[in-house]
Length: 592
Image 1 (cartoon, rainbow, N blue to C red):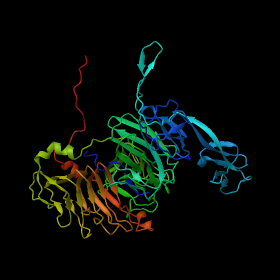
Image 2: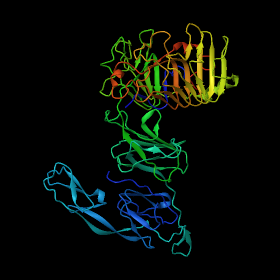
Image 3: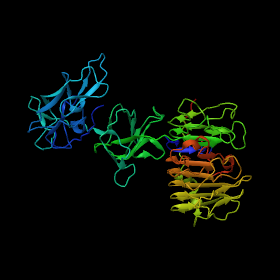
Image 4: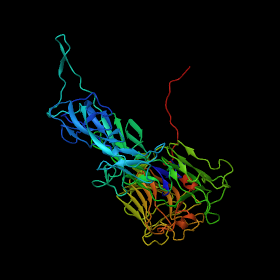
């Protein structure tokens, strides 16, 4: 379980801004409406022949009144032209107790109370685990049982409302049932599941469906503009009825956080939120278009963690950084999520803030938000339910984008002491070959209509962007896409002191509409990254650094892999056009 700032995370930005599988079936024009949907009924399977029915654990009304089956599609029977078909289905009997479906046939032992379970195999024999029960020769046997259901209609015609005589000579049409729109699916364990097509959250994941998971304890949230539906998952399936047939639904599968088993947590195996391994996503989905299965895995445990110095940290969702409080000791290591500003002044350590998530600094019950002596008041305080305004590329461009000049290349332009605003169209890369080192009188804002990459091509511990103090200097990049700080930016010495002057690899204000990533290298001891200023990822912040090259996590216990330093001078020096009053004005009716 790696460190995470989960879901649209901003750092220091506030001063600026069961035993069966689910099979969901869809209605077809060849089926009659059925008023007897419910547990134990025979349901028509729209994915197969029009004259096919199945025994289902659960059966609900679907679009136009037809049945949608929730349960196994084994045990199919066939009808022959009657909407009330009679089907011969085998019910398995376990110690005299009938149970529908072979996979559901469990045998108890003779102990009191019975504690050992067995399952019926293909040979109708109870198979037990260990220890062997007191009485282990119970036999499973199948007996034919006739079940009748009304979801089957075999002639292939499309049912239409027909006049029904009320007895007085004047007929009236039977009303067409109200359409029902459903999004549902199964939960499986497969660490190798992959998205289909070209990838991305618009594409459904595919994987091994042999291991359904009943204990994910996840929550499914389905949303579109003006609509939100939630369901707690208590088994291997989910099924939610939505209000429209639109194709703009987002389906989010949220696993518990903090996890119940921190050393072996369930995490997404496919289509995880880029900054939240506990959240699986499908976007732009339409109801009644098949199953939206989710695939999960047991997550790997790591001990890498990040830290901020001064200022506040905000996330729309969770903030997790597990502080190694026993091994991280001053003066080389500060055991806190948010420590004091490098000037060391009391009460400069800020607070973690979240809108809908949790703040986690330990999985053993400790709270390590602050150092014990870093604050005179509000020690270990946090704030939940905090909403911040979305100040992204379009927001700032609408305010002063018309003043932007064209930035011709990746080099820092020559500017005077007045504010200079630029726009670069396309992907921009800043390296040690074209560093942006601002004097204490230069003020530059750059709109990047694309992605921004910050790279040290020779991994030479270079400072790629710097903003001198002692004046009114200001540097800001506003990016419509992603911001990526490559794995080559940073220091090989993990004990590099972030509080030392002139040490930050990257300085300034960085805002991405997309993902803000501090990249790492798998299977290697990453460089220590130090950033100073404001860092915003409206679609997420992904911190990938890890001092563990594989099997040796000890170095993570001695230092944070990423450190972010609050620069209050950049807030003071921010041009008037960037600042905004966080208040809403509206005219109200006078009262007398």
